[in-house]
Length: 145
Image (cartoon, rainbow, N blue to C red; front, side):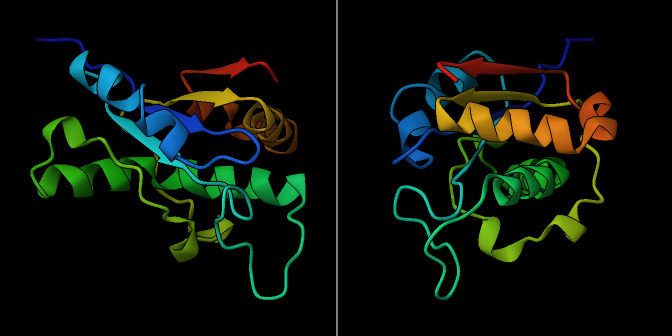
């Protein structure tokens, strides 16, 4: 039986959104057999922060990452059902439909978080706030964070 690769969950840095991963990295990893997903942090890169919201706190980004990770398996299954190769690339902004209380689903294979710049700071805050959930990850990579 062929070994399954873990899902790669990409978190962008400041002034970006999922497009920064889509341009070069998502297709690269899909071609190598990795399911991929990406999160656009709210209030960054032109994403909606909330009605009247001027700033999003890093604790809120950590909660968004928690909710996002709770949905990775469901998102990948939905993309498989649509017939997408390797269930990816998937880079739609899905946070509008989620809240931290939605994070019930556990991925079949634990995801690896890959983050850059401010995204790495948000990942580190997630790890600080939710230490009991770290066993739900295969690993975490922070670059220039």
